[in-house]
Amino acid sequence: MKKFLTAAALASLATSAQAEDVTLQLKWVTQAQFAGYYVAKDKGFYEEEGLTVTIKPGGPDIAPEQVIAGGGADIITTWMPAALAARERGLPLVNIAQPFKEGGLKFTCLKDSGVETTADFPGRTLGVWFFGNEYPFYAWMAKLGLNTDGAEGGVTVLKQAFNVDALLQKQADCISVMSYNEYGQVIDAGISEDQLVTFTYKDEGVGVLEDGLYVLEDRLADPAFVETMAKFVRASMKGWKYAEANPDEAAEIIVENDESGAQRLEHQQYMMSEVAKLTAGSDGKLDPADFDQTVATLLAAVSPDNPAITKAPEGMAWTHAVTDIALK
Amino acid sequence: MIWLVGAVLVWLGAWALNVRLAASAFGRTRAGRLAVATLFGITLLVLWEGLVRGLAVSPIILPGPSVIGPKIAASLPTLWADFVQTVVKGALSGFAIGTAAAFVAAIAIDRSPFLQKGLLPIGNFVSALPIVGLAPVLVMWFGFDWHSKAAVVVVMVFFPLLVNMVAGLQATDPLHRDLMATYSASYPQRLMKLRLPAAMPFFFNGLKIAATLALIGAIVAEFFGSPIVGMGFRISTEVGRLGLDMVWATIAVAALSGSALYGLIALIESRVTFWHPSQRK
Image (cartoon, rainbow over all chains, first blue to last red; front, side, top):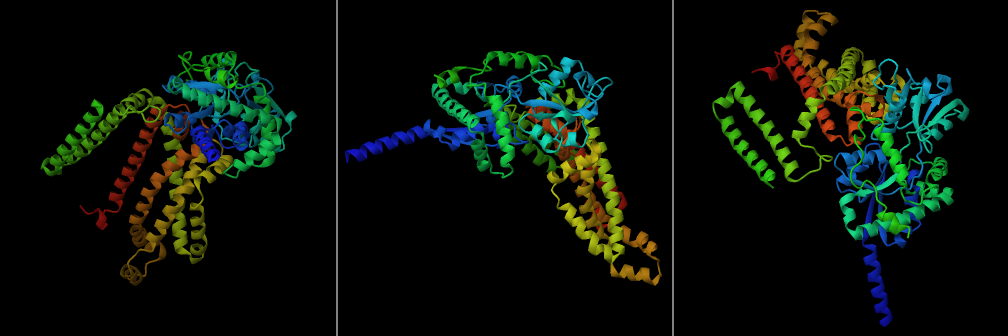
């Protein structure tokens, strides 16, 4: 009887611990870009922390900032420029962890088109992703002093679909690619690396922080929420490190969890191996120097047409409060 | 709270006023009918503003008219450029090509049972293609500029017009056909004097449906690659930037253009099919 009571008490303890529900809204569809979260869920790392985590995949028509503003998620992954833009527009998002140390956004050109360096850009047609992903590009063009409105001496900008057709069809001289996704698609399409000239945003001095974890500022006033987030970040980073060490298993987990059924294992394995290079340098804690570089990049290109932010972010745009507990 | 109560009070007051206006002698004049409609529109805007302010809705979810209005005024050059790109170049040119193609195809189908058996099912098939599947392919074929958007519009408007037109051409009265036969009218004569006029009410029905489809098609097609101008580009980009005021400004322009296009078609219809019972005053 006593044993039974203890068991019951333990069980009730366990259920009260499980009462911590966390909903995560991803920036994009289920793919290895988010391997850490799926691995943490699949391998039970969240459960060990007493969390019940729901992962909502995103897509081309989903802005995570809008989802969190509407109360559809507790925490989101997004790029820092989009988060800072949201902050300036009255949605106080706070970076609580930064699993991506490096950015995967690149810019690739066909050598055939004659582009060798950035000096060859004037008069070219360049493919850019919008929907909040355009800020680094505009910062870069501002840095190079190239206008983007199609006038003489500038560049023509295309809103590129989320694929590489524009380059393959030669509709654009250069396109945006993610190192872990579209770059592989270009290679898969039969174009070898030495036929391409690829620019990395960070090397061009316009790097921005990509996938970070963001929550709403007012919720951080609640210590219980900070505690829950610390558990979430700890388990997520454990997931990321596991995924880096076991890329093939992580890719399988992604394909299993992909409800759309659109992901292929080989492509996810490729993506995982590339994403691992970006996350390897991070223990989850945001490096303030990276934050400053992102802000400097964005402020370099303030114009009425492309306002990511118009002034340095005010208030608490990032905090170590969560990672300090998580990494203790 | 005061906004909430105020908005509801304004709404109830305007409602009561509108009921009295509509019942009065003034309500039966042209100006009266216009006043009733305008009052209704203003009430909706006041209610919207009141709810947004009263319930403290974040401008990222839904901005109020007081934010959207100044945004429209401040962005007129951008909105105009988007309008020209999407409505004039994309939607209207596609609409014209699609309409002309459907018109000719319908006459050909009507003339030949062979085509009727072959072309109509193909038209049916094409209309069932989802736009999200078609648009990326057409962008690949016709490039990023408005040509691919016009192509999407052509595909979208072709079928509703074709079906209406084919039905219209078959809608002649047997007595009228007999009369034409007793005159020993030739095919062109029968077509021009009897069958095309009889088909016009159907044709305009199709046009009205196609007008809204054309606008939807042109806007949605821009989601799949476009130059950096256009209403679809603006909407998808500004949503990503959380510039919901600009999104709503563009939506307002789209709604206005759609209504104007519809109104224009209705006006032409009343001139062309003045003989039809539905046009009697």
